[in-house]
Length: 182
Image 1 (cartoon, rainbow, N blue to C red):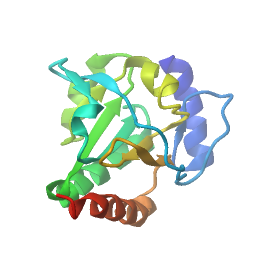
Image 2 (image 1 turned 180 degrees about the vertical axis):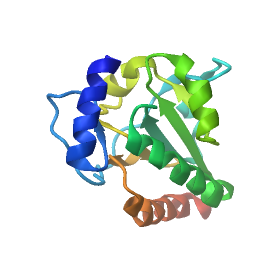
Image 3 (image 1 turned 135 degrees about the vertical axis):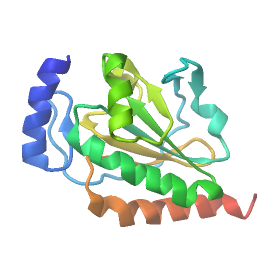
């Protein structure tokens, strides 16, 4: 998958300037796309490094930003520091940010994570098995904002630093929903 996806990803970066496509048959989407509220998100994957299981249900009570990314996707690489900044800014209020990596080969991660000083917890979905089937990911990166109940409230496809104000507004709203009850 990786070789053909690289070619498509390169073309998508040229066309979109903000996202990497995973399959040639899918149309490119430019900019953030907010979805209507969805059902509870059930996601179980392994943590990178330890292989310990991660169950998104354990994060109920927190707002979660789940970023689906790959090392070969340039917009994904650009997004990681912004997501780390959001974690630092909003973590005390209940935001948890996870980077769900879809690279086929886990061996590429150690050098990448060190070179890019990734500070986020990394989860694994080799070859995007769950990301494509369960999360319906079509563009890299795709980020999901999940409320304190575990409901996907916003989905953003692609990435640009201009998305930051939108993410901040959405996070403020989601974090405020549960702060009165805390």
